[in-house]
Image 1 (cartoon, rainbow, N blue to C red):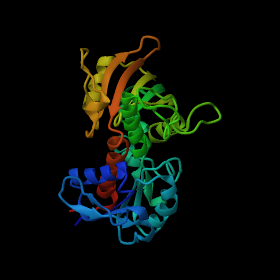
Image 2 (cartoon, helix red, strand yellow):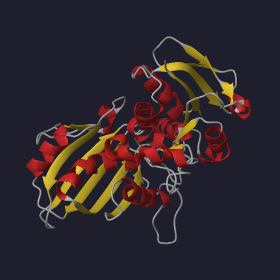
Image 3 (cartoon, helix red, strand yellow):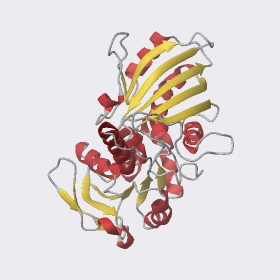
Image 4 (cartoon, helix red, strand yellow):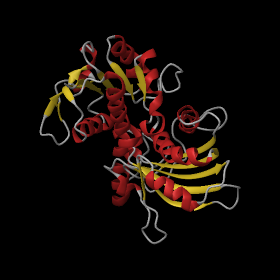
Length: 342
């Protein structure tokens, strides 16, 4: 016996990736529904590489009663209207938008980090998926925090355009092509030209000069991992299609060497350590696309602070940063609470 699962926003980048991962991981399904906005109704989309296709249903007319889990990948506006309806109908919502992440009655879950907190979902029947840049960060930090207690983190992100959706990917492609043929590279989705450029601005600016993306990393890390951790972030959009990278500097309460950190990371769940001090002995975004792991490289001691380390972290933002984490939450929910699958 399996689960009846709904993917809301199934025609978007993350929604399609959710379908791919449900198929790849052979999630125990009795029935699967692909749901999206009225303009996508009737469209046929692939269920991963299973050979099956799904006809997209209209979200406005969809009845969530009798369905077990809904994976939402359609943005905050859609979640605000339909997530409470699904939850009230008895369908547990796993929401990829930012809407519920800081709600004290909604658990914010990365299974490798704080899977124990998932039981709190019953308060609203909703579970939040973290921001893509936060997800890979806390996977990297958790085993090190357990070993030596983290005091402070300074992180600079290098975030791919897929984090801004299909429009972001299209803009990078179109600008790059236009530049090669001598046409203008007009910025529409982003605030400045993204092709052959980097933009230190993701989401809106806040009163203190930080952006909302940077704020999300701070508050979400505290909620998921430890409220005592001090964190400052600079989030940058880069001309990469898929895969977020992060340069992370960590200050610990207790002594920890680079060698010890490498050993801990090598054995940690969800992490692949690739750290050879030679040409190519590290992972870049191109190599992480389509992979489940969060990759760690360049682990080294920081002599400018007591008990300091620096490292490089790369992950497929459409997978661990969004779709994979949501499916892992669904798997955990099934094992720990719903327990329908044989």
